[in-house]
Length: 586
Image (cartoon, rainbow, N blue to C red):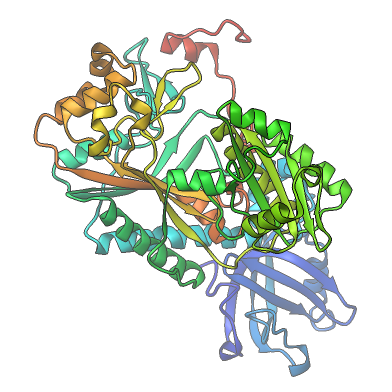
């Protein structure tokens, strides 16, 4: 037995006990009269004390041990003197006086500093991830992730769900992002795809009568990366039969409450508020609004119609709109207002017109054309009568509200706008079924298996952009953490949607024939949701990047700096698969 106890469990009740401890030497201190070292494992930290007068050989040996070496300590637990008790440590009431110190493995020169204040670049930290993961902060993140997963499993089991695994090697199907392809050695010239999600499998499980399914599953998407996105990620995947939106909302809200309570002791306020997609776009310029702070967008088209301000008049005459971004009680200097114009251009706007309201009245370009009474009315409408700044943009609705929405977030961070404490959930519903793709055609806003609103079916062929979907997203503090929908459970309707997406009958049969066939054999009404587990844990940990809560993440360019993947493969391996690469190095 290497150890009898862990480093974090010892206290005064163990005084006089003989113990064996194993772990990493976090640091050492030679104070002349006594030699101290701190031994650390996953469970905590304990102080080891050697008296060089009584154990000179042991002290000399300990002095030569490099930091982060792996040790075995055998010794006696002693209570610390009252004046030496460390209340910051769980084991701060005791120390261990060793009889034996054995070095299992010496640590070489550390390539990254080991203090909790991280002053090494992220690339270096990712290259030496095994050292980074030793930090107590990182281990806390991993532990919280584990607890969240166990909490989800326990809750869903109580709700009657079965955990069912689905394949990682599947047929390539268009679901919005590029597939990662896996060549088949046995079936040359053919490929598996790694699943972007288990969407078609979980629908087939509903046809199979499984009724309630869940899975904490790995998914893969070959897309551009950012702080909250990785090529491989984890989601809590849920599907249920004979259910509607309200059933999914109740289940998911209960799951969130359970996870937050069990991991960080936070009580979630239920039920979550709902907002339609159109309302979210008009008020926040995004379908994932951060509702913790103000600055909601306001349409100002009618208030400024006929104002005589050429930019606004021309925009309205051309069918455009004017929207305002009001920021109450925020005073911008001239330099800051110049910076706002730069932020506006970064946000996709040609620029903004600033109206600054102070105790002296309105200043800015609009002050020349708006009378005192008109300016006073606008102050009341936009700022509730308070001082502040209003940024106005004119043009096509989608471009203007999305640009102002991005600008709102940028200025909120720049001005350190006060945000409400805690976690603010909101459901976003009634998404459009279709959107315009890069080539001017139709594509699915969510995925092609999302059910349209029944009342909108007459628009499906002639006016597809009017068709609303039965899709819903769960947003938390400005992050989309879950997305789901009611599914199409009839073959005839699924074929109509495929056709409207430009997927021909032969193509639909080739890519989705197995699902279409399944829908012929008594498919129940069903719906589900997928919760982005990495993003959820990121928010629980108070982090801004999912790389902080994934044990072995990839960089923003999709590279694992620790093992060097993706890497080249031998020419013989390619030959065995029947593949060739023009630029391969031989």
